[in-house]
Amino acid sequence: MSYKPSRSPILKLWSRFGGSRGGRWLVSKIVCFKAPYFASIKPVFATLQPGKVEVVLNKRRSVLNHIGTVHAIAMCNAAELAGGTCLDVSLHGDFRWIPVGMTVQYLKMAKADLRAVCEVTDYQSIGEGDVVMPVRVTDANGQQVFRADITMRVSPKRS
Image 1 (tube, rainbow, N blue to C red):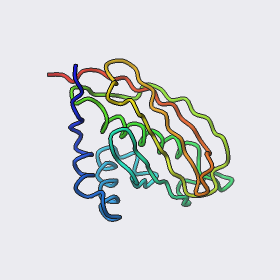
Image 2: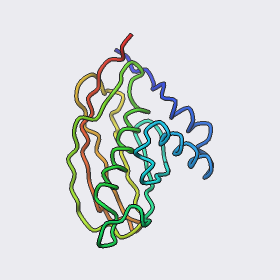
Image 3: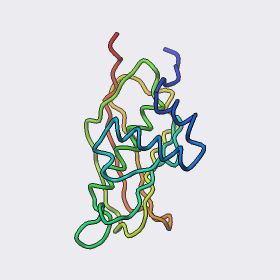
Image 4: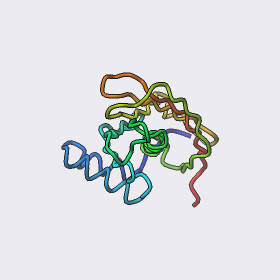
């Protein structure tokens, strides 16, 4: 089967509006409307293209834990958003996906704004079965604070 580019509506929105700060905010809001739980962290996409998605998570009171650092689950949420969106905009047009597992590592306390990045160079070869989407989360100083491997189950779209 030859690669067919994604028909993701998110990618179409990004190509139209992603060139401006307001447009990136708008696309982020639309994604969160479709998947409301992600809105809890108020993410903003910084990059959205096949093979690479970056999500910014600002340190704010609503995502903090009891010691004043970004909560682990907020980072999980940002990682799942980055990994899922990356797969969605990269995947062959005849497939669908759903997350089935996540392995995470908390490497450092997250004391600043964060950036969750999912990057997959061989996305054109992704087919049916389980695929792991790697996500790294770095702070404003470029230090990696969190890492996630998200297993996604890819299956053919129903006719």
